[in-house]
Image (cartoon, rainbow, N blue to C red; front, side, top):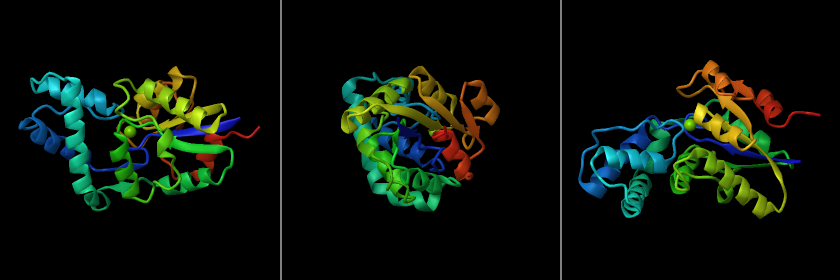
Length: 228
Ligand SMILES: [Mg+2]
């Protein structure tokens, strides 16, 4: 069976060094004229979940209309400031080699399950030359739901429809949220301890395989497509 690899972005493939957080500050000011005083927790959460918490904490009703306007403002600021990404952030060790190695396998399709909006996902990965081997059309993004497991479901659904075949999904991410989202839909969960969660925490959350980082390409390949 073919494998669908679903990558997380932040602290799995890249570290944007808080730039995403700054974009929220600008977007909130542009949308509601407010200073950011409450900073939601970001790791592993979707844009929709972060936005609802952010708006509520600033005494704003998180209506669909306001969420849409905030997301539009977020895309605006990211469009203006995306050239800051390569200077401020960096690709994580082994990320480029991992994507390239998996792209060489005819039985693997690579896309994303990320809390980011698709537009921002593209900016973040293109800034570090990591966008080439990923099919953005079939990803699960932060606009879909507040609940990360639904992003996995969406990506599997889109990949199955596009390729007209069943896939074995493999989720790769840095937080227990990524692991949980995978396990809920019977996907293989690979934890990478390059974020704020330790290898032990990722193991405890149920990850099938935990890597310290992506630098050992052979080990990653073996975790994604076990021989047999
Ligand atoms: Mg992450």
